[in-house]
Image 1 (cartoon, rainbow, N blue to C red):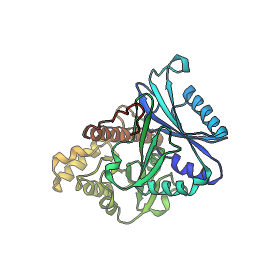
Image 2 (cartoon, helix red, strand yellow; image 1 turned 90 degrees about the vertical axis):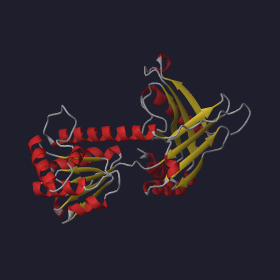
Image 3 (cartoon, rainbow, N blue to C red; image 1 turned 90 degrees about the horizontal axis):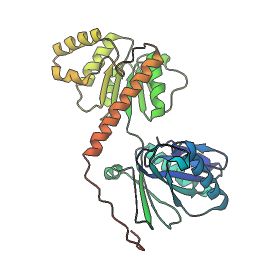
Image 4 (spheres, rainbow, N blue to C red; image 1 turned 180 degrees about the vertical axis):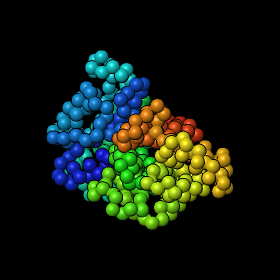
Length: 338
């Protein structure tokens, strides 16, 4: 989820070099996707490239790079019996040492990505290190990672950006809190709204802004395009007002309303009476959560809702990727640099 960016900046600021280990290519069944990154310091690691013997080998190679220095390089790892893993795929890893003197630059990069910019990386075989640059160009947000090679020379390009997962959560009761805590580790940027200022917990989940307001419907209008709306307040009258405001928009990614089938039927009848097109009601998910999970405990509901939002997010990403034009990867001629 790109949590490694601020961690890298913090470790460098503490005066220790770090090895950046990145999955540059993943073929077949692999534990992580291209672009997945972990950090390896002398005495600690952060994030993961998939665990198991693969990660043990990467850690050993990274610690050797910390001890002896050296240029960035690529490791090819077949995930078969020889590696003690049975995934069956093949992973290429890039290992690059980042020096402590670069701490200020990485603090700037981490802050820029959090603010919405894209961090672009280009690394060629034989280079002393990656070329990093920041961009606000939306065209730079298409492809997270590309690696190609002619068997001798290789090139890797990567786009590092904040995850576009804005969630507007109405209701700070027990279920609302459980959902906020379930979504926070998944990269969601949560706007948590309630008209009771004192109900929010003292310590908020990471990436969460608590909004106490007498006009919750204003937060519907203020939400960005592609937002995921969840309505679960303590007041059915307020729930209805929020439903009407959300259905007035046509650019959200998901709209879920907590409640039973009978609550949905009542709300549908009232919404149609208010002039909402009956076809729009298909955009309202009620009850919420993955079908087949019947538990009512807050943690169970939260796990089910988090899984549902991930399903929607994955489906939207698949559609977006399918609509992108085909990228032709240049083949590197032997002895030539791209």
